[in-house]
Image (cartoon, rainbow, N blue to C red; front, top):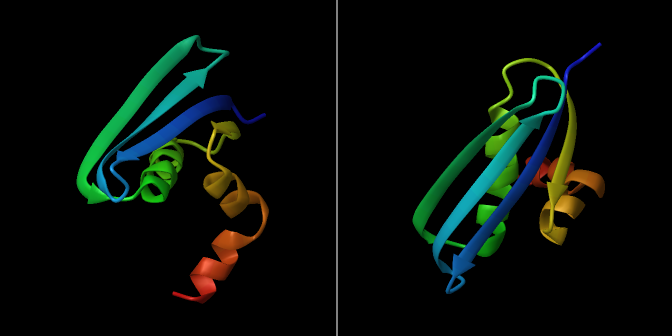
Length: 92
C-alpha cells in the first residue's frame, strides 16, 4: 500500500505580472510529519506561481504516494482535471 500525502499549495503575484511567491505544505498523516517548501521570483505571473507551488510539492515526494492535492486555483485544478496538461505538452 502506498503512503498517503496531503499537499496544500498556493501561489500569488502582486502586481500581476510582477513579484511572486509560492508555497507547498506536505503532510504525512500516518507519520505525523509536515514539511514546507517555498520560493519566489522577481518577474512572474499569478498562474505561474500557482502551478509552481503544485509542481514543487509533487517534486518533493521521494516515493510513489497516494496524493490529495488541495489548491484554490481554478487554473491548477483545470490543468490537472480537464486535460490541459496534455494539450500544453502537445503544443510544446
